[in-house]
Length: 85
Image 1 (cartoon, rainbow, N blue to C red):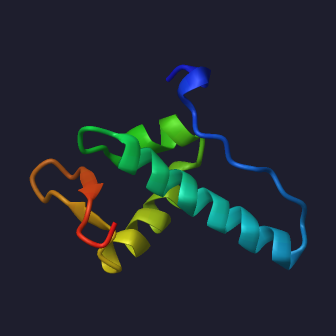
Image 2 (cartoon, rainbow, N blue to C red):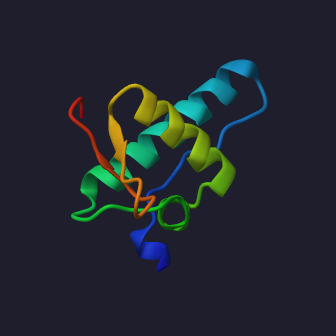
């Protein structure tokens, strides 16, 4: 993926507050990535686009699916924006 297409995630320090902000920033980056996409995306695609590790992307997506912000297609295993977004 081209660096120009990446959604930046702010690097933070080691404090608990900064770790929370970093997690929140990553969640927003994942949300924005899929929201801006005209087609469903998989975990690897979202990770490549955002620069966030695959495992973190999966955890964020799981939360967004559970809360109705993302929907998962069982056949393609890709995600799209859900009704709450």
